[in-house]
Length: 605
Image (cartoon, rainbow, N blue to C red; front, side):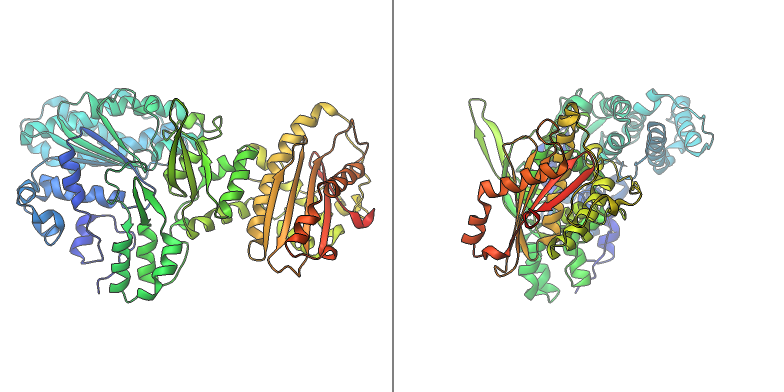
C-alpha cells in the first residue's frame, strides 16, 4: 500500500517518494495536441492545479532532460512520440499563489520577488557571453530591488511588464527553441485586490504584464494559466485574442482535475476502505466539469485515505472571506435562494461565467458565478431560453462537505459574543417570551448593521439595563420614532437581517425541524414556519413586520398586526394537516423599529 502525502504539490518529489498518485499524465498529450497558444483553466482550490502544472514542467522542461523515470509506468510513457518530447523545451514556471498583500505597493513588490526567483533559477545564463550588458543589468536590478528593505525603493512598471518576455528572449537564444510559460494561480492577487480595495490599480498593471508576457512575445511557444475564477476579458485579457478559456462548464480537460468515481473507488479498495464508498460519495462527490459528473474532491479524498474518517478537510482550507462578504450584503432574493439550497433543493439562476470583480457588489447574480467557479455549487444542467438563447443554470449545493461550509458561515454571522443567538433559539424552543425579547434585541443590536455593510459585527455593547426596557409580557416601554421617511431604509435593513436570521435558524434547527420562510406581498412583512420532524412536538409560526409610524403608534400595535396576519393566513391549517396538534402551535409576532425588536404572542392578547 502506497503512502499518502498531504499537500505535496511538487510532481518530482511526489513520484520519487512513491506516494499515492492518480495518473493524470494524459493531460500532457491532450493539451499539447490542442495547439492552443494560451490556455486558461479554472478549477476550484485544492483540485490539483499546481501539481498538474508541476507535472507539465517536469515533462517539457530541459531542466528535466533524461528524466523519463518520472513518467515510467504512466499513460504518457506508452507513446514513443512523447518519450522523445520529454525534457526538450525551456520552461518558465511562475506562481502567484502566495501574492496576498493588502495594498498595491506590496503586491507589486511580491510580483518582483516572484520574477526575481525565476531569474535566479536561470542564473547559469550569467556565465554565458551571449548576454548583453542590459540583460545582465536586469538580473542585478531585480535582485537588488527584491533584497532592498528601503520602503521608498522603486522599479519601473515597464521593467516588470517585460521581465518574463526578456527572460524568454534570452532562453530562446540560448537553446534555439521557443519557451513554454506556465502561470499558476493567476487570479490570487486579483481576489486580494478586490477584497482590500485596490482593484483598479492592479487591473491596469496586470493587463500590461499579461500583454507583454503572452501576446507580444515572439519567444513563447505556448502557455498555460490556472486559477479559480475566470476574470472578465475586459478586465485583464482585453489584449489577448489568442486565449483559450476552459471553465467548469467546458468539456475539455474535464477529467484532469479531481478524481473520477472509478479512481476513488479503486483507491478505497486499495486502502481497505471499500465499505466507506457510500459515505465518501455523499461527502466528497458531486463536482461537475462540463458533461463529466461524479467528480470527487481530491484534497478531501487524500485526507480521508490518510485519516480514515469523515471530516471537512476541503472546507477548512480557506477563510471564504470574499464569499462571506458578498453573501452578507446580498439582496433578500439571494438569501431566499440560499435557504432552498440548504434544504438540498435545486434553483434556477442566470449569470455570466466571467467575473467582473468591480461589479460583484452591484450585480446581484455575480455571486452565483463565484460560487460555481469555487466549487461550492454545481451545475446540474443548463436551459437556453428566449430568442437570445440566454443560459439558465439549474444549480445545487455540491455535497455534504459544502453544506457544512455554508452552515458554518451562516452560524458565524451570529458568533459575536454580544449577540447570544443560540440563547435566543433556546428561549424560542422553550417558549420563554421574556428571554426571547432580551436575547433577540442583543442579536439585533450586535449584528443588524453587519448585514447592510458586509463587515464583521462591531460587537457594540448593549444599552444600559436592556432587560428593563421590556416588562414580563414582552411589551416595549420605549417610544416610536414616528419618522416615515426612514421606513424604506429600515425595511431594507430589516429584510437583510431577517434573511440572515432565517439562514441561522435553518442551521441551528436542521436536526429536528424544517424551517419554511416566505416573503409576504405586504411591504416589510415576512414569516417563518418551524415544523417539527416529531409531529407531537411544538410547532411555531413567526411573523415579522417593520413598524410603520403612519399606521401604528407603538411597537405593541405592530406586534398585534403581525399576530393578526398569522390568523388571517390560516397557517395553523397547514400544520394541522401535517400532523401537528392545534394546542402545540405557537404564534409569535416580531416588530422591528431600527435595531429595536419587540416580540409578542397571542397568549398575551
